[in-house]
Image (cartoon, rainbow, N blue to C red; front, side, top):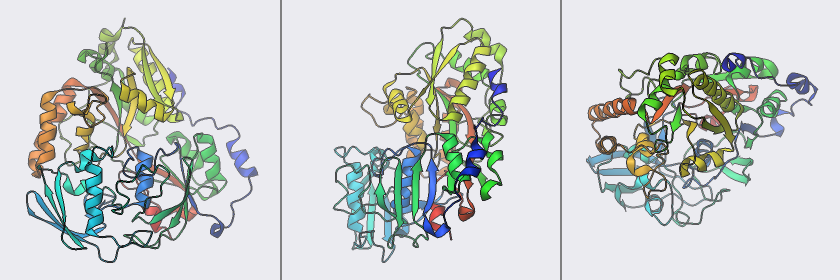
Length: 499
């Protein structure tokens, strides 16, 4: 079978011979640190960044009132010095003293309120409007204090305040996809294009000054990314190389691998409005046709955990009793055999194509022919938003707060239907919508756990998507970046702390 033949490390023609023939790396002091990623950045404007790499890049330049603990993902003070709830709907915030934007202007409560107001304004068109919509008023209480009063109950207010703060005079400015907005993060943008972003250490902001300049470079070809590491031109490749290639790199040219469990989920997405995927028995049969454990063990080299639900095991909101359907190709064949050929779309990343082909072979073994089509990532997302697909492989890269499920599965979030969200599955269960609303409104964690357990049980019954696995966060690093570590959601902020 195809997925048995692709478990070997990818054939990288002349990789190590080419690397050994390359000129050695320049002295460490003569170049910035470099992060290499497989996709070009769509925007460096934090008001409009939603893709994983875009968010990670913008958080190096911008900062919010609140940060996320790299291990627990709990909210921690950032631009805010402290906060307290004076009642269920009122949050009093004190700003960190002496904080200045990169341009030199002092951060004040007016900047915070102007940013939150701009993000909430439909005319700006920020996808983060849903995050701040529940904030009724933001009231400055002098330069260094402010009061947030909620218009409706919001359980996730503190993590919502992770959205970056801009200067008041820039909060409503035109989109700036190549940067240009004053930030509070550890770096400022020196020069930018979609494929190369040059960052300089910022002398002001919410944290200590970074020790090194930084380049974020987009290289689509995996061989080229590996070669750049081996030649000493790149220092950090975060989640940018196939797991089966990692053993061949480990120990060469001073390279090491840093890994940890990840707060993400890869899943098989169905267009629930389109036959045959409008039938739950078909979606269930496809889930039974997929051998998750085999793909984790082979194509992912064990650097993932098979998923029993959308939330990673150990997440406080993940129900302990959720269990994935067993691999049962015979039961799947009884439903799938005889159905017309379907199309499975994925990105152009080599590993994603390999996984999609393995999934297609498993479906074929269960009687359903599936044609794999790889698309540029931007084109892929546009197709998914428009509903022009049948099946797709996708990942939620940052499952930090379970309220994220509302963005992807609330009935009001179907793209093109006037709501807010990315419910690309076109899943429209009204009870799930009501439960998501209730879970997002209460700060009672026990009540939230109960609601998310109900949601998980209903989605396990309906299977609008099939959760596949939770991939580890893995970075290949040079000797210069040996102490770099990814956070649980895969962000890169520790690069600013490298000696």
